[in-house]
Length: 463
Image (cartoon, rainbow, N blue to C red):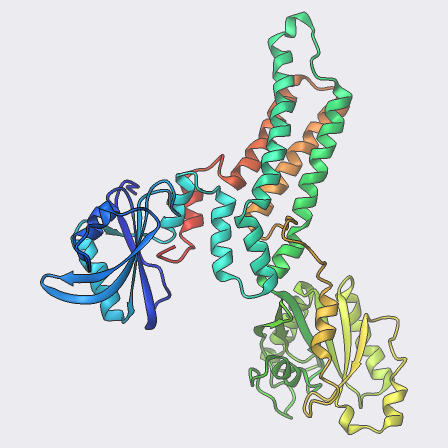
């Protein structure tokens, strides 16, 4: 890919809208737009100041294609670090495509996915983790995901990694200085001090790595498995939470034979709801496959909504608990007694103490008639137990970052083990440099074309 080309793309979402933005970037971008833009004052864009907006017309041959506003940004003070022009036109697909084609005929080329952000990275406007956060910001669907993406884009994560790499660089410099004076048997780096520093670095890397479980849950949605016997009301509960008829509801046993998933946002927290096949003994091969998937999804869930028909006997519920609770160990289990509309108050009271200590929380509802369901969303948010975090807190959300941190953690632990065993400085230095390498992969200080291509190919065109 030639990064000296002038690139162009439509930066707004595909389709018809009130306004669309066509973005142009590269050396000579302003002069190129001058060839198709007629300023109402007759002035040329190349003679105008940076960070200004101009009204005029885009002309195709002698015909006016559209009235537009043109914003100009000059290198290096732009998103990409190059000359950038943004043309705000009317949102007609015909107008968008004609402006795009017109600029291509004048010498621009269509940008590839993520190429504007990739140029920003290559021109030093942001590091790689900040560039990836741009995609996360665009994809954010909740207050929590938005806050995390904004923090990362502003350099919160990068700043912590720079600190760690600086400490490691100082660390390895002392070790390698000793190697230069190995014949004099000089020790520049006190091993006890180095070990203390290495352990501190290890704790910081581990804290970042451990935050991924929270970050990933916030980013992709906290997985909530809805399980229980057939006809307990699982699909009705799913539809109630989603406020739509997502799953088929029927009195016939075994209606849900496969996993049904959807995402919902409650008070800024995303939940990935998973309706599963009802648990029962059956000779139906397809239904048994669905039940097998139920227990697989149970393993993946953080929260389990165990839906029970309140008309079931205590003995039957206790027998069922022996199948479900061992597989839900370590998870937040909410026991949902459903169909309270069908029993007397006395019957309801008889269930008050059943499995009280074995589950995290118990609720009594009628999903069909929406009785006692007003606080159910609050129950889910409470069960999610998302800790409060500020804009300055660093939470890892990217699986690539997590893998690199795990590798860095292994490397720094080898350093600590080597210090304990008194290994030579050259081996210590290699492990320290391995740790620096993996941290550098996150920010892009260590990168390859393959890594960059994989990251930016996931961006939308125009960003």
